[in-house]
Image 1 (cartoon, rainbow, N blue to C red):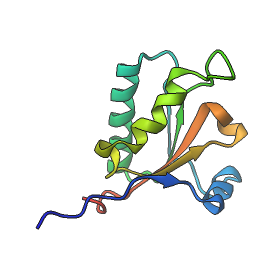
Image 2 (image 1 turned 180 degrees about the vertical axis):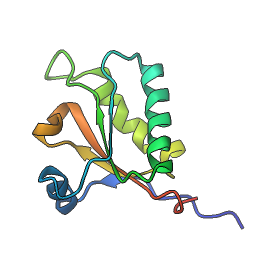
Image 3 (image 1 turned 120 degrees about the horizontal axis):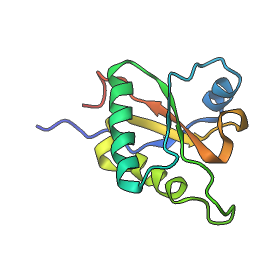
Length: 120
């Protein structure tokens, strides 16, 4: 019997968000996607998250930028959440949510990373 696939990513719970925001939970890694085209950004994101998981990281920040217009936001700001929910990253991503202002606010995401020994 094949193992059950990991669940879809969920929003970071408010309690964890506050702990990250206040520095009680460390951010283990950061990836800045500014200036990358979509294909480059997606490859970088996938490789980065898999490296983070292999290195035991629990929380990462993904900087997408806010985009040129506040109303629509940037392309990466819109597509990165879809990539994080994709089936190919379900064994890596537990959840994600908008970062606190001092970590980039609307232009960044906190990503909770699944332990490497789980979800496979």
